Structure formats: structure tokens, C-alpha cells
Amino acid sequence: MATYTLQYPPAHDDTYVKSTTKFSTDYWAYIATNPATPLTGTGVGTNWIAASGAYTNQRFHIDLGSAKIIRRIYYENRHNSGGDTENGVKNFIFQGSNNAAAFAELTYATDTNWTAITTAQSTFDQHVALDQADPKYILATNTKKYQYYAFKFADNWSGANQMALRRVSLMTEDGYYPPAGGLGIGNPWIFMKDMWEKHNKLWIPKLILQEDLGFNY
Image 1 (spheres, rainbow, N blue to C red):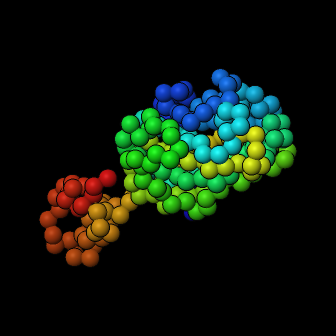
Image 2 (image 1 turned 45 degrees about the vertical axis):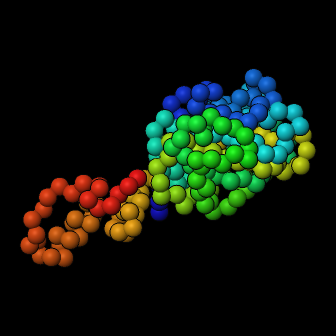
Image 3 (image 1 turned 90 degrees about the vertical axis):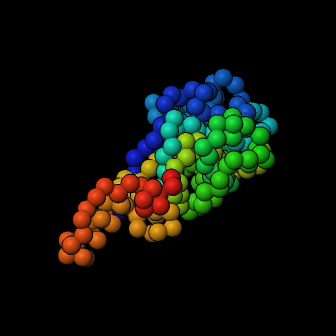
């Protein structure tokens, strides 16, 4: 069974985590990425909430500080002591980029220098109507390293008020190696071991660089 590791931005602030809008300074986007933020209790200072009336078309961007292959999303949708769950985000598109200008651009419709990443589902589940943690996970079929990741949240569960989110984090898959530049050999060290065994150790080993094997990530 695959295991995953949480990956956080270098700091939980407006430099590394951005959104199209926020309701007030109690509801910055980076509040939702901070693992120190409580998952239960009041919604004040514990959720990202978009501006009043902004319940569609919001971008949410995360800068990981360096490029990583994100393979799973962890989230806890909006709740306020178990209430207001209908304001949680719903339909979304997941994107990756290595372009700083793309990260800084928060216009919902602008997709310049972003690459869409396929996910196992395209919605965030509504939080259970109880004051408790409700962790959910979504797999991403991503094979590229990106420094910047984006959620394009299209709407919320109520179709009114504003959209909100209590927690979202990105995860790498432990031991995952992407296919090599079309060669399909995966991890070069496993490839070398297999070749050594299959050819009765008759070849002379040498250091093989990523570019020798077609790695372009």
C-alpha cells in the first residue's frame, strides 16, 4: 500500500499561499494550510473564507518553495463548530506550474502557464455536520515536479453566501519515481539492477545520469 508525506509551503503567510479573495484578515488562505490551525471549534481564524457573496470562481494557490511531485490531496472542508458546512468548496480543477507569474495571477479564468492535473474526483466532499475532524483524501495522477499548485474552486455546496475551506494540504508519494522521458524504465537504479541480473553481470557498470535515461523532470 502506498504511503504519503505531507508537504507544506516554507511559511504559512500571504507570500506562499494566495486566494482570489478573502472575507477579512481573520480568514486568510494560509490559515487553511497551517497544520497548527485547529480542526474543530469556531470557524473564526480557522478557515479560509472568500469575500462576502463570492461563492463561485475562486483560485487558491500554494507555493511549496521547491518543485515536488504531488500525488495526493488532504482536506477538511468548511465547518464552524459543526455548522455552516454548506459553504464548503465543491467542484474544483487542480493545476501545477513552475512559473512565478502564474502563481501571482489570481484571476479565475487565467490559466496561462498552468497544467491541469487529473484527480480521482473533481469535488471536495461536504464536511460532516458535526464538530469533529473529517479528513478526506483525493489521489492525483501527477508525474511532474511543480513548485506551484492551484485549486480552481468553481462553487460551494449551497450556491449562496461565500465559499470556504478549513484545511488543505498537498502530499508526495513515498518512493514514487515517474516514468523516464518515454522510456518507461522508472527508477534508474532499479533498472541498472535488473540489467545486471538479466545479463549475468557481463556488462561494466558506470554512473548513469538522469539525462542519459531521458529524465526531463
